[in-house]
Image (cartoon, rainbow, N blue to C red):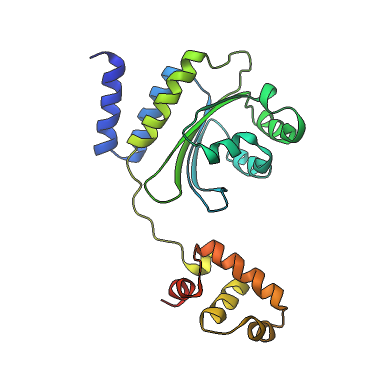
Length: 237
């Protein structure tokens, strides 16, 4: 058995018996040795019915957390993000100057360059829960040292392996409905779940029926329910 295979077996065992903290430290050290990078985002999130990926958590190394907020403002312009949403396991090797410097992608390239990103590789996997995603984004500042073809091929195997072998996170308490909805959305949704119609709700809260409809559509989307029965169960138990 060669050293590469031994390393993979070691990571698999650590993923089975170790903590997430230890696993991520060892996995990133191995990836850095094999590929070389100066920044990384280890992300988890969920893809909703509209195709948009919402980030639940992101561990950054080598870059300020500000990059997430700045990138979030331009992510809708990024073809890399759209390709990831369609095929998360398809590795993307991106040179910022080459791939994000024309048309609507210009703000994306400017954002990444402002955070010292000259190149990146992105790859993910779908997790066990419906719509769940995990991904790794590897950054390089040095534009003169592109990821080689051999490194790209290795990353296409290594990143999904690392993500799939990661220990599951400790169970988290599900967010409360009141944490997901605005105060008015909650009021309108509860009134609707209790049987009031649009016009009654509109009169009660002194808004138009169209506004009631907008609040309910938002509540249905945020709570991931599709009918009044499911809404009532989520709100009222």
